[in-house]
Length: 321
Image (tube, rainbow, N blue to C red; front, side, top):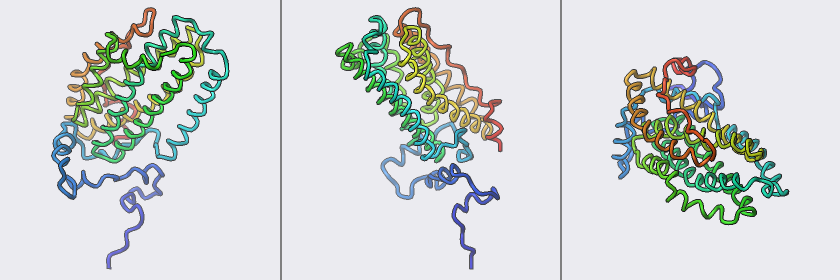
């Protein structure tokens, strides 16, 4: 008689009680191990080409260790704290004459940045959802889908802020679509996000999103815009933007951990990542140069997108382990 397998038997090799993160994220996807779905589906060929057929390959994807060890419970707890903080800032604006005291030229900066930013945010959200859907391992899928939730949070909070600003600047929300679709300063970024949304290889979609495009967007429209808000004596918006920027810090950390794992598990992955980064570099730099003037004054685009160096990062030791 075979011995009965214990709960979480696949984690038994560690000879210790597994963490909540390990239990909740380990071996969630059955079909990568089976090299395909149990039933042949119309989508099977798509997954074969754009997931299993990706040049970004590893037999250790399930070894990814999210630096934050994010489970659903932990994500909700973090989001609750941040949402409560931003909620208090918005309530302070709503219950006062705060917006009436902002300078006219600064309100115009908010109108031409925050309003179209909703459409860009939807693009980033859909791209993160796609990476999560096509990811070849559960832990990558979990991290990408929590990132998708972060994007939804940003869109919702910007929408609320625009509703409040409409009391001072009527039409601020409705103008966003036209700016996104026609303003020359937004068009390279719009073209970049639309190209990303038809980038089907899961690995290239990940690199284009989390290594190339999204860091530039976050640095410019959250980090730099927050600094401009402080300079314009709009300190509450600066705090809201910095709170939203906190999400991007974790997104960069889990991506860095994944790139380190990819590099140590298969040497050829380094060249693949560098090639995709070089392909997307001019797209991102063009978008950054065009969008930077939206912030007003002598706004400068962020530094050019660096080529990722997965080897030698602090995540590499964990990836080897």
